[in-house]
Amino acid sequence: MSAIEKLFPTSPQERSFQMKARRDAGTAAPNWVPPQFVACKKCGRRATRQVWTKSLYVCPNCGVHLPIGAYYRFSTVLDHGTFKELNPDIAPNDVLHFPDYPEKLAAASVKTGLKEAAVTATGKIGGVQAVVAVLDSRFFMGSMSTAVGEKITRAIEYAADKHLPLIIFSASGGARMQEGIFSLMQMAKTSAALERFNRSG
Ligand SMILES: [Zn+2]
Image 1 (cartoon, rainbow, N blue to C red):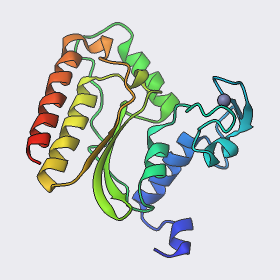
Image 2: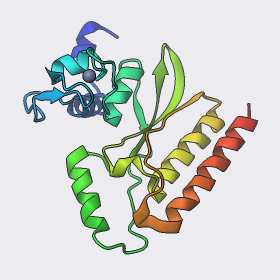
Image 3: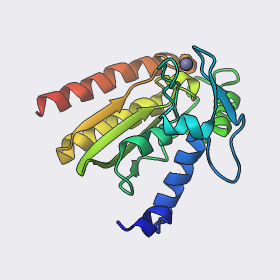
Image 4: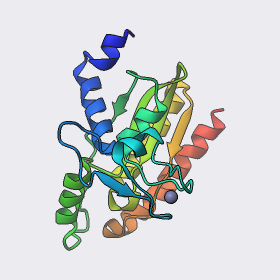
């Protein structure tokens, strides 16, 4: 890939991904994500988002890791231009008609730009094709909903099917309360898929 292609990606998918990664990093010009100055939650050190982005949101003063968004995480891990999202259209479902759940989902979606707490994708790391799943703690504390369980399971099965390595960045607050037993079932479903993947070698 040429330097020009890196700066000005030609495919719409790559342009969209880079926009989302910059938004998650808080540096999506020209509309900077407020606040421009971010303080470390442990030592209180304040710095601009550009400074935090350069240090991958690890505090240069005390070493604490601040939470980071899913697409920004992908951009720090995957080789440039290799991100391909898996099952981007799987969205949460208010199966129990839990009070205020649809409104809270809509608010979380506006705040983070995400449809769900998990983003799964294929891409290359150091030239090696891999499947990567990232949980985003900004969306319902990264909790396991039916849709999150389904996305993670499909990512595991995709990796098994294509004989690819699988990496999961887990940042989850547990099961999604608003989906009750259906979210608890996802624990069994993802664990079973992981065990099958493990046995496949
Ligand atoms: Zn600090």
